[in-house]
Image 1: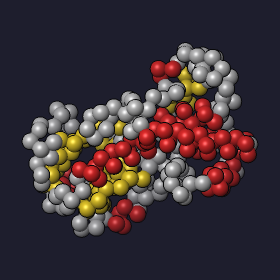
Image 2 (image 1 turned 180 degrees about the horizontal axis):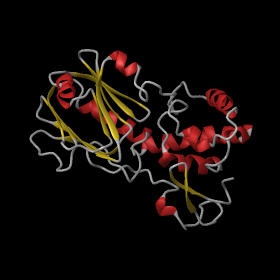
Image 3 (image 1 turned 120 degrees about the horizontal axis):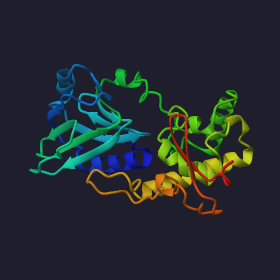
Image 4 (image 1 turned 180 degrees about the vertical axis):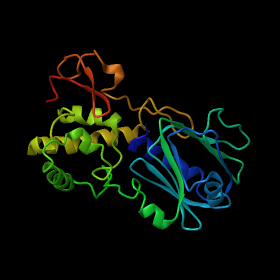
Length: 277
């Protein structure tokens, strides 16, 4: 699934390539994936909301891409894994695609969803009321996210005695853009187990956590995302995770203890049992 670094990379490339272009046509594959959520429904209402509109600008927040349109509505893509690719002028798009957007310079965008995703054409009010894109917390590298901010949010959640740090960091209203992928490296750098309760994290560990978030997200954005994901032009990112499935059984880069894999809160966790407590 795309997380903040991949979304930032895609958004930068989209802003350079599609801003100012008009939408000529929109096609949704039928049958489409069960967990591709579209708004508005039915399909022809979604298409009608986009066709003929000009893309004024493109921005991102967390795991979401916002295309500002010339009628004040927003074309929204987010919470997705798969491939979002630009089709160059005159070129044929990839065979597997669930959404195709044709632009007025004969280029286009194609989206292929893996697992789940959301696409929508939303009015300002609908965007504000969106249950996910409308409830985002601060981005990790934004001016709104400081050590003070993190401490305040942690204090608020410390009252929920059993909440683990994994659930806290991947909950978008707390901090947006961190998913299960980058979570592994953040917690490794902070020397925290994903099972650690928010209420038990010490002041020193809070500092380490904030620094780990900053370091991991900054490095990944500079590398255009993870090496397992691709950019708008089909190129792999250059960030190699410290901990993912490739690290299982390999020695910890700090203490040489073999890296373990487990399941926790609906996803895989990778950790050093000696370093992360």
